[in-house]
Image: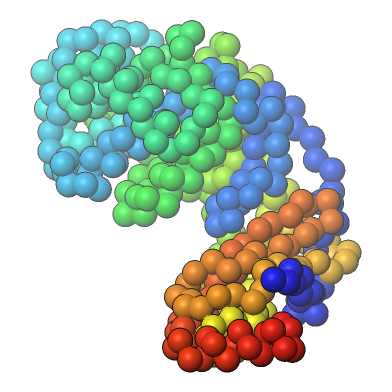
Length: 380
């Protein structure tokens, strides 16, 4: 058995791998993520669980949109407004509200708008009560969903984000949740970019400042409490790229607007996505033992795309690592090794190398002669 390491650096063109220009923000917590690759372009206290304010409404929306996707809820279904929802989240509270009235039967579509455009606490409680029976039980569902999505630093006590010691989220979790919403609900995501909504003859504008100042901005959710400061989970596109940025702990609406746009613009300017390899591209060849074919091509079963700083410095180093000979039979798509992509100041990316086709096993007589040849000549 032989261990092979095959350099394939020559297959690559010169790519960016120097550090992007240094960046600092006044936000207490911040993350910038590339939507397509999921890579982090900027991190500042991203795993710290902090009060998320109304950004936690994204989990309420995620659950509601999941119900719409699985067809257990329809956009034209109506949910009833309880006295509890009105008292906790209605106009009399002085907080963010959709201005619902007790006894209203509100369409699910309007409730989505009331949450993502108007940040209505009353709308969130209505959704919670009509899905789970009570806001407390809905919080249990929120926590269960967070675990399913791999959100490791989130806990929920209510559907609104109103202050509670058990209502916490990290910037990393909020970025991941935002990515799930955009990926899983492409037919519903457009609600986040709508700039105004009228309900009960009261028109309210979307609180997301980037919708008005940054080209390509189309979501997601603001937040503000005294403890959390001014917060924003944002997303924007430029060409075929999308970035997600989440920030909290800013001191004013103006600072939130300026810092979030500055972070997103920096990400678009300093980084880009590069396709390193195409799905099905042959990257190496390995010897086969007991096979009707003497070798097997190794490939990747997905496009390999990497987010890198724009400023080019040196080549990315790539190697194909696998043990050979590989014993037949071999089924196409079987993982046979790894493609290691090393980037200066950017760590190592590992992609599975898989069999490009099936290789059948030779018969008993063929295996006999293969053993004889190996005994006489050794592995060649």
